[in-house]
Every structure is written in C-alpha cells, then in structure tokens.
Image (cartoon, rainbow, N blue to C red; front, side):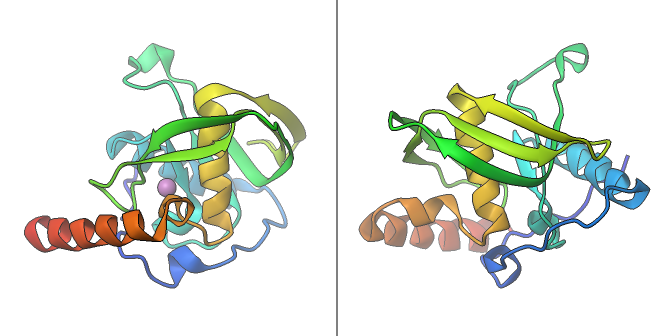
Length: 172
Ligand code: NI
C-alpha cells in the first residue's frame, strides 16, 4: 500500500491537459492501485492522476461513501471520454482532495455516458447517474485542467479561494 502525496496548490500540474495513456500495462495498474490507496486514505471518492503529479488521463473512483472493506466498489477509468450528457441538470455539493476544506454547490448534467479503458485495458462504456455522474464529470474535468471551482460564479470563487488560502496558512 502506497500513499502518494496529493497536489494541494492550484498550480500548473492541476491546470495541465493530461496526456492519453498509450498502453495499459503493469506500471499503469500499479499507479492506479496506489491512487486508490491514496484516495481511500484521504478519504475521498475520486482521484485523477494529475492530483498526484502524474499528468496522464487516469481516474479512480469509489462513490460508496464510508463503505466497509467488503462493500468497496473501486472503479478505474483510463482515457475516459464523456460521449453524452443529459439535458437534465443536477446539483451536488462538491469538494476536491486538491482544495481541501472548500465545498460548493455545482450544477452539472444529471446523467452522462463515458467511454474508457478498464483496469485490463478493455474498452468499456458506462451510463452514469446520480453521484457517479457528478463524480466522473468532476474527474474528467481534472484531466482537462478544470477544477470544480471553475463552475461557480466569479464572486463565489473569489470568496472560496480567500478561505482556502486562510485554511492553508493555518493547517499546512
Ligand atoms: Ni477533484
């Protein structure tokens, strides 16, 4: 079990358009295993590779909050692409392991379809609803250098960033 350091400054790494993974090999699987350990340890429900400093299109998720060990449902997405979104929107209070302590309501499409390569490099398509739909959209945003605070008003973002700077100076 390896816990990787999580990037917690809104720096170039978090603003990078991440590169597609060419081959799903053991190195990629090891990275995903470590990302999953890191996510559970944080704890969080989603993590993109750029959040541990690796600018490749890799996401791990487990939207079952506070799951016992035997209820865990880890999901792995390599080169995920959102191919369809619903017109219906949904609002969730989002947070991010890279901006700890900040939570804001974000409105996104309520459902989406995503294509990706799985843990074994097999092509998959998934129809995502509810929290999973929000979560995968949040994570795919990371791969494109976008953060959830980019989806809120400039005014709210300004207040949130002031609060984050204050929190960081107190705790980190
Ligand atoms: Ni995030």
